[in-house]
Length: 97
Image 1 (tube, one colour):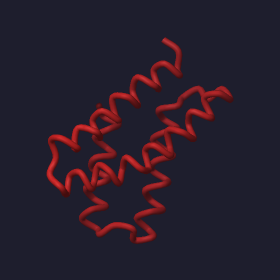
Image 2 (cartoon, one colour):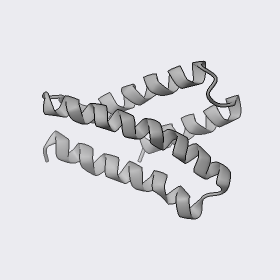
Image 3 (cartoon, helix red, strand yellow):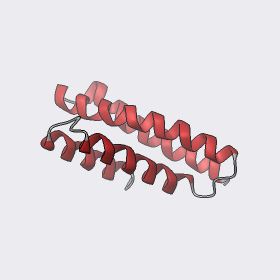
Image 4 (cartoon, helix red, strand yellow):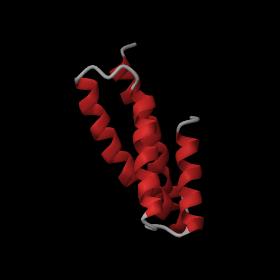
């Protein structure tokens, strides 16, 4: 299977998990998932551009791109410490799926 097909398959699975909080999550879980989803969408769009240029490991690139985005957001105090930990936990879960 080509890298771009695997990337699409994996990111679709991740997105479905984030979307599951719309129906199944509490208000706070939905907030955490929505926050991560916003960063996720931006990172996926950037990695898709890199795939077009020959990116060979897009999932790894997505992981590192999201890590950098979230680190910056956390350093800018966009979330409380507890919310940042929950976003980090969900982020880690997505990449273990």
